[in-house]
Image 1: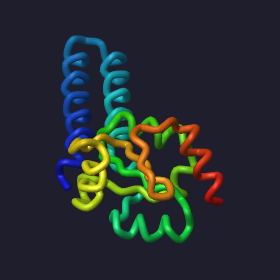
Image 2: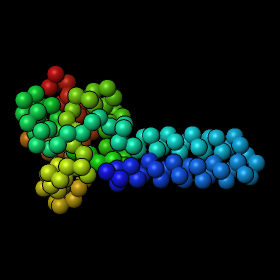
Image 3: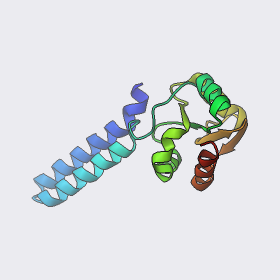
Length: 145
């Protein structure tokens, strides 16, 4: 659980340090800009940005019923964040599995990626796709509607 929050906490601590340093140097505007930038980085890298995760077994079950893609991801992954942002409001329709919280999800990702935990790995109709184009994932979500 703490591993998930490590990147955002580090961004907040670094941002605070840089902002205090800039403020002490007599540049309060720079301090505010730095602090806001690091707060934004912390927010984007927090697990709060991505939809609520479920377990891999439950995601597979739900996907078999409704045909929606299963997205394996992990916090702090820039490619996962890119996929999430490009999907927009449609992202909530996919089934998201946090591989850092779900050992079965991590094992499923390693099984299709030569032992590596490469994410995002999107499973559609039983076929895995590593770091797919967000437009393709949007198309898959539209098909399952």
